[in-house]
Length: 318
Image (cartoon, rainbow, N blue to C red):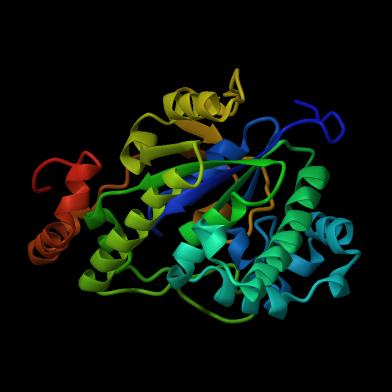
């Protein structure tokens, strides 16, 4: 798939949902497609990349990565052409959850708020267009998962946003969020992913998935997908997603059989540490929680989240 000037429709595949839900795996799989670029969690680029200089998935610090240097040069004329702190400040003003009515109904906005929306959209548009150009892609996969940010992206002109609402059984998420895992991108010190209590995980799982569901009102291109389906039938799922995105026939040459893949080097920013592993992988369903999770934790998580579990097709006590 080759870009033909500026006339080719540009698409953002935005993965919404909650952390520890399989978004990095989905991004990596989609990113293997010809014409697709897996960007990672772009919402983190201003603090994690511009400010903290965390590792790109290629293994280099963000500001030393040739790809991201080319993107920043194309978008802003260099590192001094954009104020990362301004973007972090604007993010807190423009799309916290409390601004949902203003973000979805423009007529409610004050002049001051609209000016801030215009400002942040202008910078995001420049960044995305530069990524399209430097990566020579027509589809960018953004696994940020923050739904308010996804709603904001629907307002970038001349870009079609496809919302993939990915969710995983709440018990699997809660169990995963109890584990201590090192963050390889923080290369200057030893740091670990934040762990959470069962109650906190259950509450956040409900809120983030309800928020993700709201994307269906901001874009006509919305699809719900369960992590379990992706992990059990990866090849068929990626084929179906390519059809949903309008990029067919899918390129499935990176699959070795139905569940083994060969991952090429990428430039994802942010996500699960698995993104740093370049070798043949066997995709398997991570359901260790079904056996290893203590019964009282499993019961607490289930009863705190059962309404949405039923809505998403999870039947019965696990």
